[in-house]
Length: 424
Image (tube, rainbow, N blue to C red; front, side):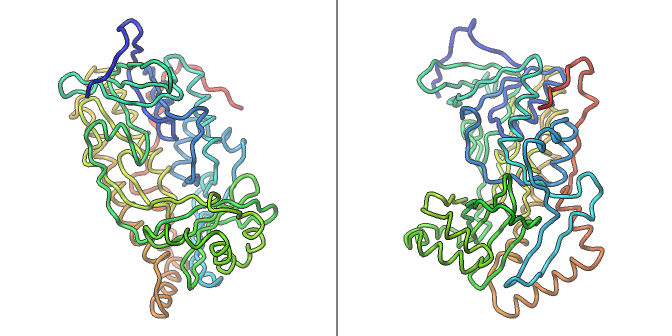
């Protein structure tokens, strides 16, 4: 690829260049800055104006943010604590995964709007020396020295091109990662799920459920949970790649079907669901990138592995990826060696954790969202009773909450002389 560059005098240089200011990219940037590592963060959107659907934090992700000192302030901006997951079959309670079994303070799910989380993380980064934020810049090339990636070329719309040179580049730019594509790494997409999800939100004062609920009906399954402020977020599951057929029926028919399947919220659906533009389709698939590291490059979060929404694992895994990548990148910068071999311990640690979630989500999707007759319903009820009423349930809850690799932040690598981030 032929890439334009600025004069060397105008080229910013950082120890690490992070592409993508989502939860993982910002959390990793904050960890590196507190460890005395200079960071340039490149973000395509302006004022973090992006469309977010996943906002539920598992306890493992909450712990990472708490160890960074931003969780309380982010919660104070507005959030909803949820006691766990429930599955209902025709409004009969089938499965109850109670997070109150877990040890405090991470004994709940947290519906935290990403704009609140990102605002706190960004403010904390901006309090520290060595941070450069390129807002509204799109990466259009990677710099290379032979096979080694040495930086990025980014451009703001209608503006000049900026060349950022760095010891290591981190791709944290999501499931359709441009960094991954420019590096020539295959996304490893797998059509592992039978459903896509159409999301929408409804104002719902005084209608909080306090849970994430899967409502199974003859027509399929709907995911419902409280979100801030006084809203319900609803995920309507439908057959994979059947959205166009559903949309062709029109909003009136869709509204009627949803109201029939969720009669307790029928009034809200009829009042607030006005057009197809109120519905946002999530193409559900699994993905494992062929490589997570190259010479000078690390992929984290959805850039490295993509998951379905069931079990609320995406943000959790991404934050734990950031915590696992942090000491590896600190070592790479301090030794001046960002070779694939030096970065590989991160991938070797985290790839099995992502694969375990893929396996778990496939089973959950078939068990909780799949269709079936009386025999399948009976089998689900027996399995659900086993999980809900025995110690097996507590072990399953802990594994869902923290994953198979419960990463913690290496705060011992932080420099004591660095100022703490301001709290809002």
